[in-house]
Picture 1: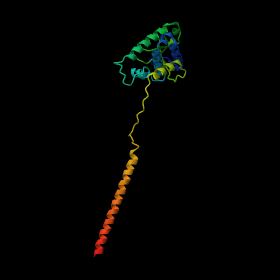
Picture 2: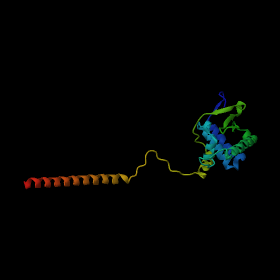
Picture 3: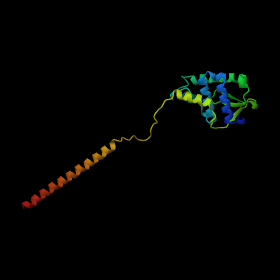
Length: 201
């Protein structure tokens, strides 16, 4: 987006997002709805420049972290379909009356928000937490939950075997006892030897 772009608020963008998700162009495609909701919400949260194919593949389409866009074209293909769907939406009477247009420029997954009164100049969306998202949240959360995988968090640091502590303590105790008994036995034998030697004289 250009440095001189007009700004727009997140609430207006969220309202437009809900209108697009309810429109006929995306009504029959839950995947496109989920993808659009995801990229818009990430942009409103100030993370638009960080949206990559991997993020979309994992968070929207349920792929794992090994996703490779060179061998799996799902994100690229769906992005093309989403651009077409947005174009169809804004060609309709309902879409054409919108004050804000949501567009997905080619070569990026970060959407831009164009105000109708700026002659097509992209508008900067002020980062916000869009609490008013309803259908957007439902579509996005449903997509994330569809193929969600629960993994145990990795624990840093050394691994402690709880059973080794007591065993090591018992081992040390037995060693000390053995050493003490041996010392007493040696002392006793020494005493008997020397006592016998002196007694014999």
